[in-house]
Image (cartoon, rainbow, N blue to C red; front, top):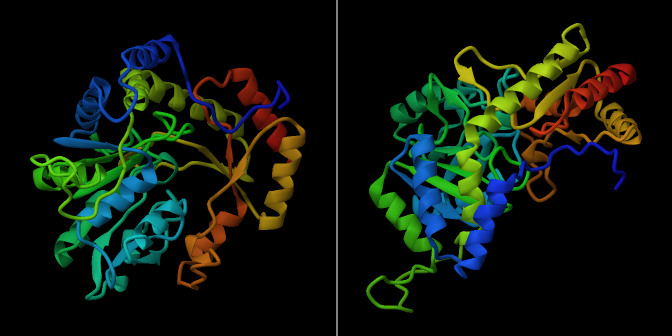
Length: 366
């Protein structure tokens, strides 16, 4: 890789992360037992404002475990936005349930609450809003719909650590929420995930199922089918260090976005992330939508950026377009917006000079 190449993302690793991970390794507690796991769970729950946080091996299994533990399965339906990383749908499908895709708000790109009720059927068990690219979904409206129809709400918060609505953080609005700590996320453990909840029994069930559903009274006795969805003490050590720095990391993400916003302020062709008045955006990725662009034009633009040593990535494809799903659904905003949207380098250690270079390069190409 060219040393001048600016990647889309990279984690912020300091001496604190190195010290904690080294401590976990030298302690010899390197697998799924160890003090950092308990600490990470407790501190992440406090950060989100929930009673419980259950650490797991990645964000996808966090969704699968949560949906499974809520007894959602074959014949059931879960309403979700059509624009998300495919894990949102895959994890639901792994339980035998069906994802039902709805459209997004064109302003903030999250699920449009006004489109949900028309999709509710007797088979609907839950609504799964996705806090996309760092912006929270409108949880007040979603929770009102869920309460009216006696549905569960499962937040997919994989991309929005630290985002909030009226100072109440994502992860604390639904029956439960799921997070990812993949290497490009706002907080990372390399790989890893978390389920947050205020429900004591649900949290206990998730803890039981993530460890092969092994009896606590009778070792190697399993009363039901479980999973190996555990997080390691090494991963949790990295997470603890990241969580100690979370306020710093959030400030830096805001700073990076503000610099981009300033550079593009005079452009009428490039539109960056929009934040609803009721939301605090955690800016996982900087989004740039180019007016009038087709999918082919977008792809050509990304190649030109790469030639200039700038990484980028397209918006997620609508999940309904995947060949093994291949379902035409009434989501015109989703089908439109994905074609002209790209994500720009967004990590917290970007320099002002790099942001200026990226911005001026993009402006010169469109």
